[in-house]
Image (cartoon, rainbow, N blue to C red; front, top):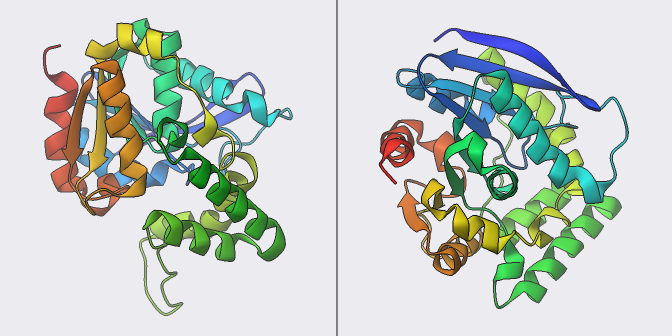
Amino acid sequence: MEKKIEMLVVPGARLYTETRGSGPLLVCIVGGSGDAESFARLAVLLARQFTVVAYDRRGYARSPLDAPVDDAARLALDADDAMLVIERHGGPAYVLGSSSGAIVGLDLLARSPGCIRRLVAHEPPLVTLLPDATHWLATFEHVHATYLASGVEAAMAEFGAAVGMPMLRRPPPSMQLPPEIAAMLARVPENHAFWLARELRTYPRFAPDLAALRAAAGQLVLAAGREPPDAPLARPARVLAASLGARFVELVGGHAGYAMDPVAFAAELAPLLTAPR
């Protein structure tokens, strides 16, 4: 499936975007990898039904900042960026947000519900909603300290162990990879460093506007992976859905099910997006 690449100029940054397909607009907001390639195989499948736009969030490898950003303002800017992506491609849009990208989607839905047809928020790590929030916030602070002391690899290993999500090992140099996958893997250390430094401690602390989300609950589906059962990063979606009276669903795989099993994920996601309210 042919893709169109564009650098979208937004206030203070340039966003790398990829567009595939035709039909109703579907915007995919990526999580902590910050990289649109995470959605590539899913996008190819969904492009049979939607115009699929995926983009690197501001500050990640292919979406450079043109002005410094206060970490406290990053989430609001991410939501503004998502709205500009939607407007650029003729919204309103269906939206899939993953992990931190799900938090961005929730903030956008609360602030600008008119630009979203339906948001599927997949495993937003809003740990302040949980009864053991103090434990998780302390865990993320410790991972950040490990990053400062020992670097990206050690910190990501600690994070993966804490949330039950082992980090993928780098393939051996002798393995022949598709060029786009090899390029993504080359960006991973820089992207993870940005996430560890600028996002890990702040996005999970975000307190969503529950009243605004409750008013838009018909446009919202909270989702989590089926595997493993009761995974830590799946818990906030359940709690938030119950609080809002919004629909909660389980989808194939785990935190990155859209990348690990895109065929099954696409088959489950498409009817969720287009189902009547």
